[in-house]
Length: 163
Ligand SMILES: C[S@@+](CC[C@H](N)C(=O)[O-])C[C@H]1O[C@@H](n2cnc3c(N)ncnc32)[C@H](O)[C@@H]1O
Image (cartoon, rainbow, N blue to C red):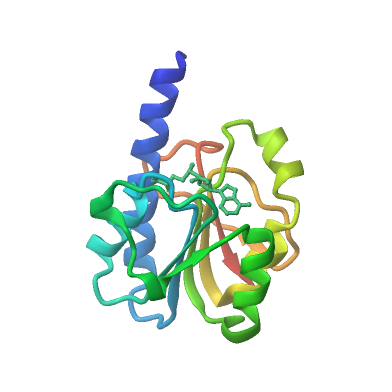
């Protein structure tokens, strides 16, 4: 498969995952955390499908499409290895949905580069919260859950925070 095909499939999987997660967390109060603003595409989708949610976005190099800039008080600027633990001191266990989109595209590299991420995500997720990631997050507090129809195994990953 060409990298273009792979990229298109990744975006399709992302949309399915986000739409599915929005339905799954209905009735479960809590923050939504977008880890990796980038161009702002998935943030823009999240705010469209979850207009009533408080969405906090984490990014080191803030340069989205201008139409997808989060409000200043919902944007946490800095390296997530530092900003997530700091955020967790006030908001630990308060997220209903966490979307981690910080992949380099090379899972083996991600596991090393973002070795600190699973523990930070587990600390921020409320019991029963959904965690979505482009690569597999290994943590004892995160239980893998089945992907929605149409998302092939390995294309995206979903977890629930154990109570
Ligand atoms: C794949 S992009 C996100 C794409 C975005 N979700 C979208 O749909 O446009 C990953 C983003 O994560 C950010 N990032 C990567 N590592 C980071 C870190 N340690 N701390 C903060 N931001 C980081 C990068 O700057 C990049 O913008």
